Image 1: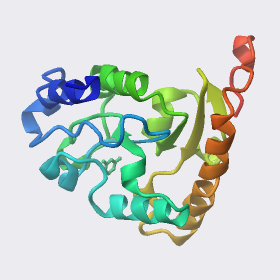
Image 2 (image 1 turned 90 degrees about the vertical axis):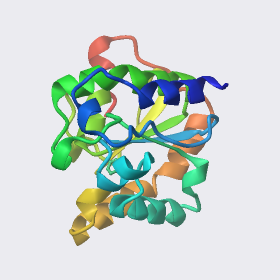
Image 3 (image 1 turned 135 degrees about the horizontal axis):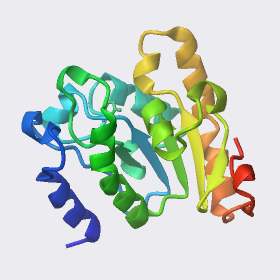
Image 4 (image 1 turned 180 degrees about the vertical axis):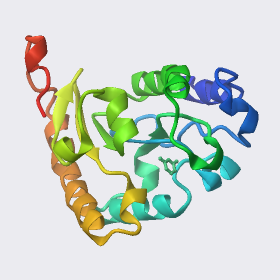
Length: 199
Ligand code: URA
């Protein structure tokens, strides 16, 4: 069994927070183990909780459109979430839920070793860069630990707002160049902690 499949089996029965009581299915994430691009969303919603797959509702359809706009498909990228179980009524994830779930996304990143991580929405950005604001850094790349990060707004935010839609479309168009750059290898990382923030 691959380490990723083994991880999925562990996530499926994870008892580490109260969401295990209300979930229908945990949503570990999906995509090729060798994916170069990883999308990290926030949390499963209604449809994801039913199917056990990430981004299968309206936001997922928009994500697929965005992927098509850069000549890609969802089966070529890895798609995961900060938390693996649906919060009741799709409420925001609680800090304790995010912390209880932290190990799973960390393991996924270690196994997949993506070259680019596109964070979707503020919870995903905060998972990696707690002090950054999405309004300030969306659409800008930043290297950390040899990974290129490209923060974006959440596709669900764009579903009913035309201007937000244009912003995400623009940010998405930066992905191919970000990947091209990341394939050349990690940029030199600066040693001074206060200069680590490249955004
Ligand atoms: N929104 C998310 O953040 N993740 C999903 O899987 C679906 C909707």
